[in-house]
Length: 364
Ligand code: TXA
Ligand code: MG
Image (cartoon, rainbow, N blue to C red; front, side):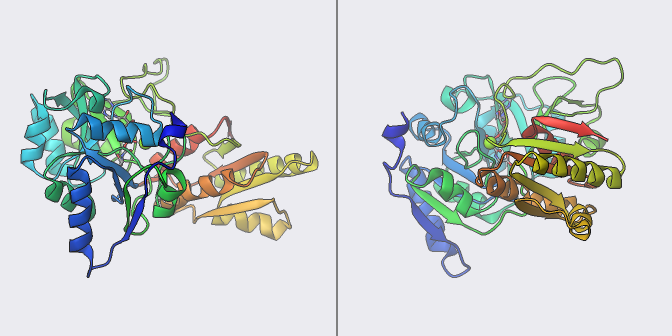
């Protein structure tokens, strides 16, 4: 399968500017209409788009990404008309979410219409819909005249791309085009909420937090990795669409988290010295503050990637996948990750992604 798809296509690279926006979007829309695949930035991560209503086009997404069949793709829409075309029996609460958060980083799972092929929905009776807050995908959906099936533009098992070079690293020769629109503003994938069940279930945490959802639609049930559960309550079972494991780097990731920031930094220092004394190659994924302490103590690792200040999880979210990709490519024995970031704003989603990447977790 991989041989067949690998290096089969010529991948065109479009660099968007204000001057060429119009002509590039026309060309990209033409590729989509003809059943091809185009990667593009959104405000969350880069997506890989194809005509969501054309099963042959959607198959190309699965092949290019080596995505397991049955893992449903989300669909990007740009108008009320698109929404009504692909979804039915839309609950009133879902409309409230659309009003509050669209265009934006929220994917809403709804009952699907028959027009959506089974391959797109992974044979589920539902689909995930999102109206992105970015002019490139909005314009592409409009000009192509069809909702786009658009998962993240990475190979399955790799982190989502926050830069066009990440897309090229994974998918060059496998897709028809990449639109380079610079770094993505958020850097983590959207929040996914399933509105086909009551209470609604949060399948993935992104920039829209659980509190924000609950302000608009009342009680929801979070089921993502590390979601808060009340004492004595079992961790909720995995839902459809969550069966597939998220990204874990090839290199072992050890995450250190805890309420006291200094304790977290101290523990990372202890682990670092321990691994180094065993002759292991260690990569560090750190807040600026933890890195500052190490520099002062004269500790150094083989490789270090800085995520920014603890109080700015937005900045860290933007850099996280780049950092994981960079460190994972270095042939290290272990990556020590700093979980001392503030949990406000994007901090909770950041910690969730760190927990998913980690195979060992220390809570200090
Ligand atoms: O921010 C994002 O959502 C990015 C950008 C490109 O829009 N897209 C993205 O797509 O992350 P993807 O396919 O990598 O993740 C979509 C998530 C997956 O976890 C998928 O399993 C879930 O949404 N999903 C999609 N349709 C679903 C459905 N019908 N039921 C349950 N989960 C669904
Ligand atoms: Mg993905």
